[in-house]
View 1 (cartoon, rainbow, N blue to C red):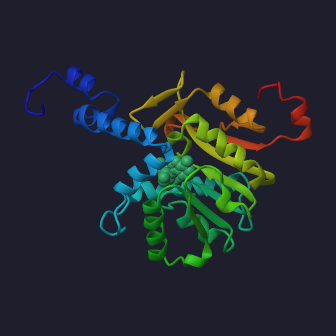
View 2 (cartoon, helix red, strand yellow):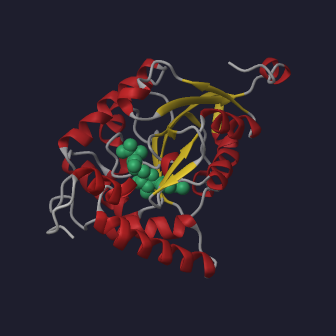
View 3 (tube, rainbow, N blue to C red):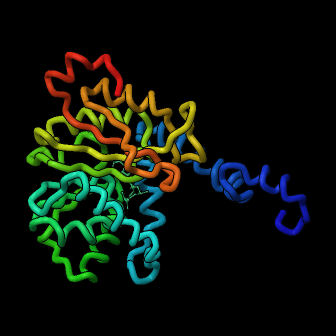
Length: 263
Ligand SMILES: C[S@@+](CC[C@H](N)C(=O)[O-])C[C@H]1O[C@@H](n2cnc3c(N)ncnc32)[C@H](O)[C@@H]1O
């Protein structure tokens, strides 16, 4: 196909959301087939997705290091949290922490042991551990958990002042988001704040196999149904960042009385 000269608009159309003809007509249908088999055998989206991510994760951080640009973005994430009150004594959960690019900066900033990271991909967590060791951060300065579902049972002993989930709901179906929100409620300390990003669209969409898009009102309803106060953060440049930032807090009694009113 690559050798047949096609007009650019046709090439773009053929590439579709995948931005690649090979991915769209080869890899993607195979992934849907594999995912269908997972579902037929009683396994979940998380089972499928973690297996997919572990397949991409290489053993050594040195053999395929993350780009410096990707790592540098975490500085903005930490500053954002600080602007919203994160301080060295805060207890923080990095939900879907991936290769720990935020941990690299947040762990030295926070008091030892107050950073907890959690992810479905053992491969990504291992890469993160290696990244931290290379930076001189010791394993006992933080806590990590590999999870298989959204029950948060691994952190049942904890409460958090700040919860952060950057580009994680982006890869979760609604049922998993609802389960996570339900599980998080007792883990969010009084006065605690949960910041997460999601990809916005006019109608609910699933692009390729792993990218989930939601209308703001749908995300609001999902969060409010679980009893949170929901606010879209205008100090996050959604256009430049490509995603929407939301803050959730526990509803107070006053909020509960007026929860019909939208902010
Ligand atoms: C795009 S990466 C973002 C990683 C990290 N938040 C960051 O900003 O560097 C998404 C991460 O979410 C994790 N993830 C996806 N679904 C998850 C779930 N249901 N629970 C926990 N982690 C999940 C993936 O394994 C992946 O590491």
